[in-house]
Length: 288
Image (cartoon, rainbow, N blue to C red; front, side, top):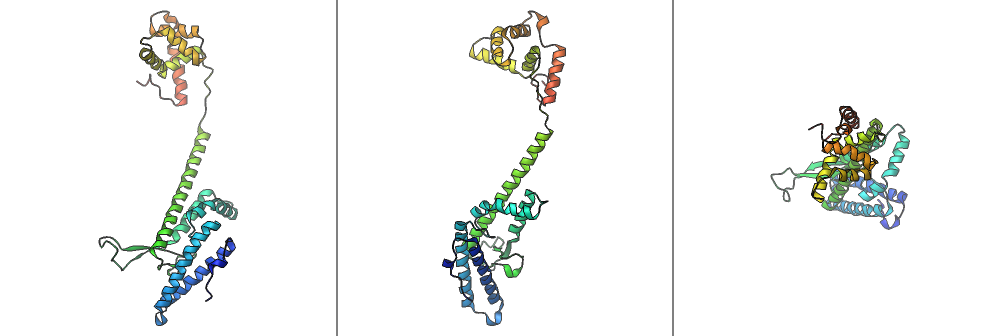
């Protein structure tokens, strides 16, 4: 077999693809040498494995430089090519959705992984299962595609990128779920414009929502006293209610003066509570 000179393959996805095809060929020779017990040459087998590992690692590095996607590419390449690959998938399957592409990606990544019991127990705790991860090269889950001979460095590198890809897909999946949920909420949610309330009702709203209580406590804390007229001044600054109107509505709430002007009537309370229920607001007063 003519061995591939990596220096001849630079800066081109098609060339990297040809090099990757070379990896498959070398892998096939390793499997053949491994199985052929009658003519098994351990020295030649180890040489092929070392050569495969060297070229495999070089392709990992070069694919990142060239942004070349392949089944064991680094996570950086995976993320950069994600949208383009998804677009191609959706063009092939027009009825598919983004989530279908994610599921297919998860399946492919899962199909590249298997495990093997390890006989050598020297570096393992004897109380734990002796399992070594194995990654499959090629398109089918078959023993002949098992890269059982990879060194620990490559196994950790591949495993790291595999986990990163799974995490990336999970993030995309969660974004889709949240986006769909938000869209459903927006469709179902009815926004009410209640800005045309009577001025007396606005005072009742502030009473029911605890705003009047809050402002009363702030005045006692910050000013050292409470005064309904001063409260009317404050409310007029943000409510659109004129000071005199606010004053005539607030004084009956905090004193016995002019009870007929008290806005907290049965009719106003019913209107305000009904509107708050439509909004879905938890009222601070009526629920106590």
